[in-house]
Image 1 (cartoon, rainbow, N blue to C red):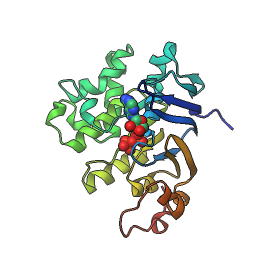
Image 2: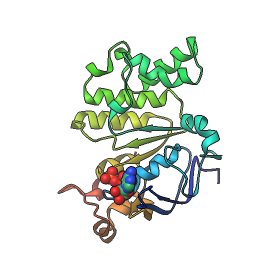
Image 3: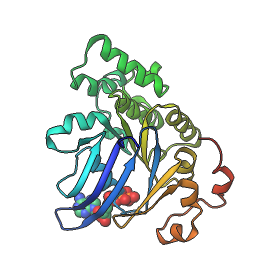
Image 4: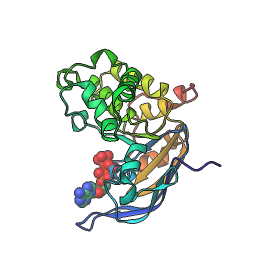
Length: 251
Ligand SMILES: Nc1ncnc2c1ncn2[C@@H]1O[C@H](COP(=O)(O)OP(=O)(O)OP(=O)(O)O)[C@@H](O)[C@H]1O
């Protein structure tokens, strides 16, 4: 098999106050996969994600991105390869225009002129926001800002797109439109979510983290229909939602 785009081995981490958040996590994601990272509040999902581009580090185990170890000397390249879209788009948008925000990362990599313009235009096109390029981000709706936040990451042409709660605070139409966008992208995706129908709709595989450990790694439909696993790890489907009904639809 090919080298995983994301290869996490034996990752353990305690915060400075001594709280052990991860206990030997293994996670392998291959090119083109869309994987959901599920788990109850406090499971360690954010802690794991923050290790993927070196925001957190220093614990035991390793993280490699397309073979490159996540460590201090590689951080610039790691952060190009791993694009994280945080839950709050306002953490990612701080320039005066959408164009400037989307171009910020590539410009920092030294791109300019036609190549920079091409990156920005392509990323905005991918998220359906091309016509908003000259608007100030703070004049956009929350759903539009989330799409621009995705574009800021896509403009870096990452190898893996990591999304933290991508469907949170979106109305049903925006939620569906973002799903269509994510499906249309030719990029490997790791999606942290409590929105289990969204995970089923978009990700063929789900990894469940609980108390800092991987407790399941299986097809999403299999995870969502394992009643004992779901109950043990506080995973609940919306009332009346039957995963078997949509579980076999093409993704
Ligand atoms: N800065 C910190 N210092 C100490 N402990 C922390 C810190 N940040 C998180 N933790 C603890 O680490 C554990 C894992 O937290 P984390 O935020 O990774 O969980 P999560 O799965 O992302 O949760 P949620 O679904 O609520 O976002 C929790 O017990 C949390 O209280």
